[in-house]
Image 1: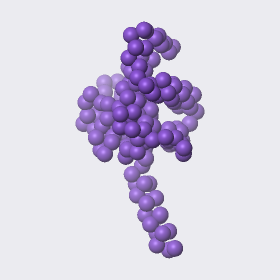
Image 2: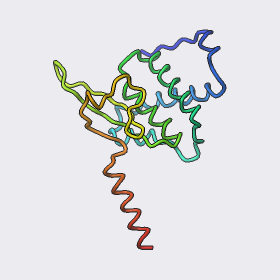
Image 3: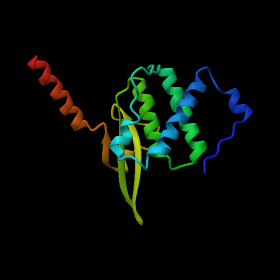
Image 4: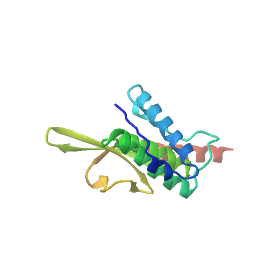
Length: 162
């Protein structure tokens, strides 16, 4: 069950623009909660691409969006929210024009496999205490680097034909 309480001291710490960011964070969480069991992973990932017409985020707004996202997720879920964190941060980093990828990985533990999701910006994990690349074997990446290269190659061929 989700829980959220607003305290006066938390309200005092809000800055200009935070309410619109918080509104977007809650809308993205609601979208994720609704769609994560209804869509295959590639289709779910597409839902977190920024839409045409959305204003880009400044570096300061991106930093604030990251902090608010992590705070809201911690408050709502406590722990084990890595996929939610990865998808929401992916959305905000893409809106800021950053080159990011979502990575999903697994590792063997006593009793089975454990999964983890994170984002990387220019190959560096974001908002992670430890480097997940050292602990997990990557099983899925979005956007897929091979498909991205194929798409770029296809576009170049079409431009050369014209």
